[in-house]
Image (cartoon, rainbow, N blue to C red):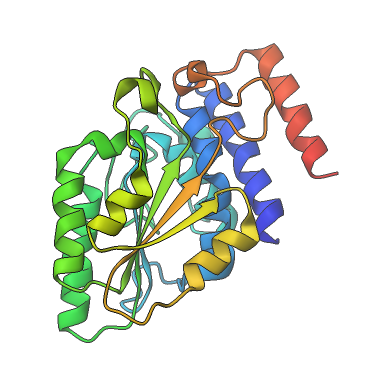
Length: 269
């Protein structure tokens, strides 16, 4: 399965989970689907049959409220062969919780309390450097999450310790829980801020699979960490969900599910 087909399949799985289980955060799950599809198809070095392989690349998925997208890609790649995502998601006693759960294979850190994962990723990257390990550390954060001060502590920490073995990806869909980013707490000029903090910065279309792959593959001739600012669309892939704050919270009705699935199916045609 190529990354474009995988990205669309992630959205279809997210749609099914959010409809069946009356779950939320479908908009943010859709916006990050293409990044996840490329990471797991073309970028990250992982072993499905050995999720704890010591030399694996690590992904710290900080926007854990959009768990359905990460669960979906891991399901498609075969990490959950002994588990039933679509039956057990959010069920009592299930590890498929409504925020990312590290007790599931392929998941490094339980997340959802925003602002923690990047700091953990920095610690892992620093340990890897000191132990001369070759694996790479990826972290995905949401744009609204950058309101958390702990992220900026980590953003200071990483270049100070020359953590060029880590890549931060910002899902910049421009909408957070209570409104548009520029209305709630403006981030711009975001690229300039990261550059001032001594990061290598790449701006891309976060739905362009070639751009995502190329950005992940760029190696700089310095010891700075890398940040990819992925400009995305909340609710990407379903016309009536795109750029709508409502889909931070809502689960689709039966009618909306059928309509959305029709659009996603058409994307594969």
